[in-house]
Length: 338
Ligand code: 5GP
Ligand code: MN
Image (cartoon, rainbow, N blue to C red; front, side):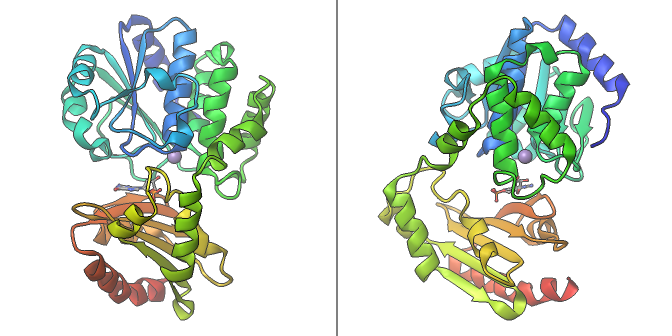
């Protein structure tokens, strides 16, 4: 873990002291790290007496809606007028868990146009230069871990209460697949130890996040594994594709396909797994890998996306069959370069 520059901390502390309204935001289709980091930092700053609003570009799955502070999160797409007013009236913006402004989707324009002082806290490679201060560290497990470090180094640790701890723990837990990957640094566990000392119920958090699905979702998963997974043993790759009709048939709710992309990685010998989902006007693609195979390359080069070495995503405006054909064409090239 890199140290946060003292000058960045000092600058932010000064900006905090002079702030009237702080906005904390994250990427569209927020995941557990995005929401956990945003709510954790918001509640901590609120405890410290600051005036804070948390805003997401759009809605997020129900399994994240139990988190403390959830009730006050403003969803830009559901409440655009109010959201725009807040963006225009804030003087400090924290952007969490993303590295390029287009990850804000419809919020990109108002946020980049705002004259507020902007701070990025993130752990994705190659951050764009779109904020006044960039705190970016790819060596941490999650943005939540970097937010925790920021809180500690800013002297705000005393404002981490049980609610803040639950949010930050959720961020680390979800971005590490419940400590299955990206979680070999001792600092991660030192942080988790501190959070546990605030009496959070780790098992209950796990239960609320991972054991909160519908029977339809389980059946969709079973169907995907049985009928929709294509395995290329020689290429150490497997993918799952899902049509819009299939989602409808299984009464799809946002978040239901969360985790599906990881499933093929439990097949012996498979190091590259992909999930293709047919949306109304594009195909959403998720990539995961094991080891040194960089999935953010293929995401960036062919699917207008990006991400981490072992977890990336993107989208493409083709139909599902054409997308799968393209992928199968590209695949041998990427595996050969491996
Ligand atoms: P997921 O597959 O869970 O949607 O995303 C995995 C990771 O890929 C995210 O943490 C994010 O870093 C990245 N990612 C997903 N979708 C996009 C996208 O559309 N654009 C970019 N630049 N990155 C994405
Ligand atoms: Mn993250």
